[in-house]
Image (cartoon, rainbow, N blue to C red; front, side, top):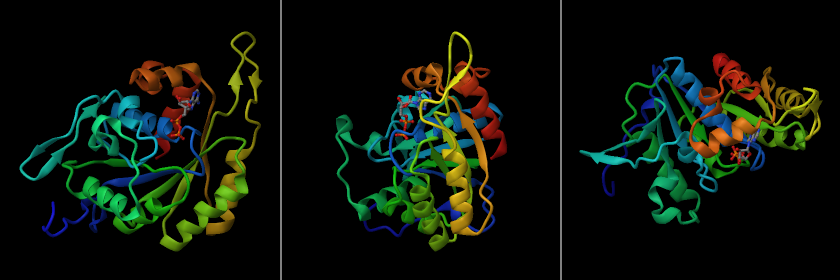
Length: 264
Ligand code: ADP
């Protein structure tokens, strides 16, 4: 929208009733996008109006995981987002022809995020989830500038170099005055398909350690909201565009994710 004045971000207006969660992680591959998509689908299944902004420029896997294969359309000067399972979704990947790898820099990302938040027709959302790129980079600061009331949800594995992640994410939150709503531990053990015993593939305790570290750095109590086991159905659900909270809601991963969604 070159030349025009920037629209306000509706979610940042005083009195906005939309809860905004920015989902963050210290590194890639910990299941941040899977958690985002499943929380969104679980909330929508509970009757909430939910949107997801896929701001993970390096991964942009949210539309596939949600099974949203439509493209955005333009109506007047607003962008209409496609939706799947009752969740509206917009992704950087929808604007890169042929899914070209994104090599954008900070200011362009900020601009894209600004447009995702203010030029997309979201309607009255109850919840907006934002899937951030891994690490605590420029985009976390952009989110804080654009939606200061966004709360941060940290995803980690049991193994993660906990102190480090906690300190980095925590110091950004302190700088930006944002609240960290809690920690989700993903890949917390693999239930043996034969005997049911848990195999702690990635160790134990990472979620707790991250939560304690964040509590220390921010001075506010940061809880562990739940632990999600390794579950083939979660991975399959992502590959098939049918989140495990819908395809196997009573599986260990499905029910853990539904419980976490209920706490947000
Ligand atoms: P991130 O967004 O942190 O990079 P993804 O959500 O893309 O991570 O997950 C990375 C891969 O791990 C995906 O293939 C996903 O299906 C798989 N995965 C994530 N969490 C689990 C889990 N609890 N059980 C099984 N597979 C998982």
